[in-house]
Length: 226
Image (cartoon, rainbow, N blue to C red; front, side, top):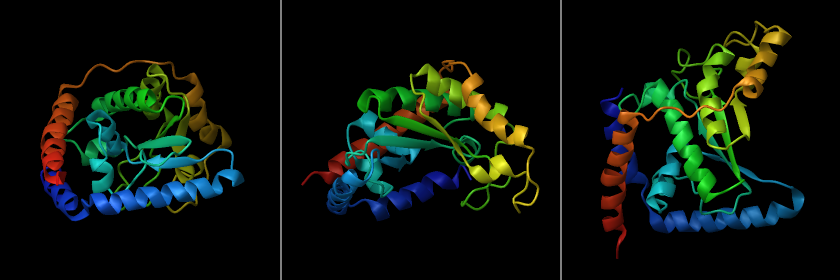
């Protein structure tokens, strides 16, 4: 519900905001990363897309609010999860489907500038996933992924992933109707055949991002001062 969502987020913000706990979690995760460095060549971390607002604001506040320290830990790659089958539905007050592709482009530019060569994006979703209520908010054809793929490529990001395997292999949520191999392969082929295309600016997205910086970051910066 676009009316209720901002209030729920505000409640979450007040409950989760804890800079001391966030710093401790960042240090613990950095130590964990250091310990398994010798056991793996490359580490990836999943990134909730709105955490990228921290890069524009120059802080860690949204990561703290969402309890996901990612940019404070030296991961090798940062995989941003932008599931535009349902994000524009959940956050329709902030952007529509075309605005979702623009969000991919802007976030791609910003994170690539901050973490050059260490960026990946995961697009979707092809299936309802683990979040309830998304059975109608899925991509049913590979072509629906094209705007997001084109936007990321236009920003110089080509490490692109797809969520999720269930929707690629099956046609139904009970996982009983297996797709034909060619239909499954088409979900991957779209990543190779889509050409880069920079989306047009989205006025609604611009308003939402500017509002987030004003309402979220400035007051929180004041509150976090000793």
